[in-house]
Image (cartoon, rainbow, N blue to C red; front, side, top):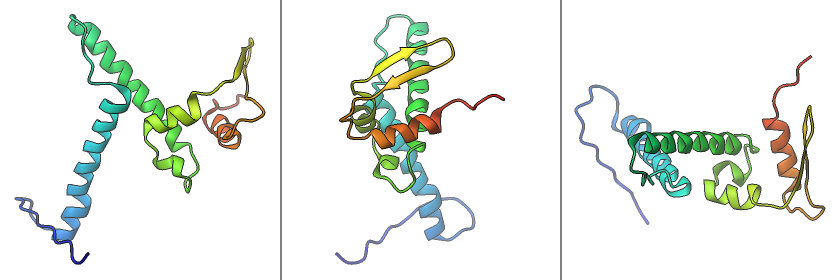
Length: 135
């Protein structure tokens, strides 16, 4: 309701206030959102092991899980709401579903149920994330 005035106090040289706010300050806030998602949706802040090596391994695995979720979300269609969905939403709607998985020598067959509500999106993601075909 009305003007939303923002002020920045900085020692950075050059640049206009609007540029500094939109490109630097807002980007910092986005980085904090990524850290919050990493901690909240992947439980990455849980370092309850008594050994430092075990906690380091746990953090590394959570970092890998974050990268996998990031790639899954980036593979979603650009104009779909899935592209901006939180990781726990993706987990509940795209990963936690009943499917039959058959592992063969040269491929893995995933059979989705006939009534799968997001079958089209899942097939698109399978194609987008499939390893490149060798000639």
